[in-house]
Length: 443
Image (tube, rainbow, N blue to C red; front, side):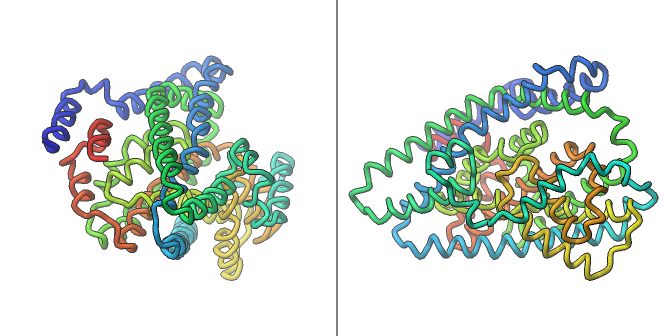
């Protein structure tokens, strides 16, 4: 009976016309948005077109905090052994640091080999354009990270959408609920049901994804134009190729060690990748990524802890961007960084990429912090990459999403809570990964 229930919706799904499939709609919207931004620049840069993309991201962000709270609390509350939570957290952080170091090293190696900034003129004349960013970077350096993750009030953390602060409270609340034992059964059930309801909201919001992707892409192309990125095409291409190498080689080797193909995993999360491509925000795919990872065979407790934490501590795309952009700016300004300075980039970038997820334009701000520490003379050179940061952010978000997805599978395997049979069945498309009814039936 159960197998019939699972198979029937998948057959219905397969019979759907191609134009009704979400990721096809998003892909078409991205192409149309790029064409509109190119041909109808004035229309594409209008406020209401911009609002299409911004509005969709806000719809997603409005449920990020509740989803993290519900999933983290539920994951911890269902664990009987408190030591398991600490064990999962330590394993996740160890994995994050190892893989993040690889991302930084790859960025440095490619930047030194390709030298995308060689031959560019000085950007000193544009120093005023980035002065405010340099000031923000200095402020970011002075912020005590521990104080930053502690909210003034619990309500304030949810209201401001500070993910690290929500995560901290969720962990504390989860431990408290776990300590209640049977007395907390009713509350645990309520939080579980609330999580399902919030995911339902996401499934409704996702129907507007093509509209949001169209607006975001049209405004981006219309605002910056094709001419604005021609002289920086080398940097953009180098960054995209380096990120692709990281995903295919580094994450691919990790995936192969666990017995699955990175390409099949990318196909499994194609909906989320296209959403991120259209919105330039990895947060927009966070809820559905967590849901898919659970269906892929990762335990609920690991997903609830690793994925939200990874969005602050496992920013592989941001790490690659910071090392490549730093070398690019140094080359463009004619500075030859020593080996010691390049090692400093590794250390500083590893630190500045942590805890900045709640800051708007975090990738650009952390780049300023890195430049200021390595060599303050490099900070004015940020004007060179200012115009194309939007195009770079899409690749950063895509790489971060892939890295966090693989990280969750690795920690689940490391913890001994990865369902290999379900993993291979999903990745081999024996079960449709996008079928909502299948997800509900299989729980």
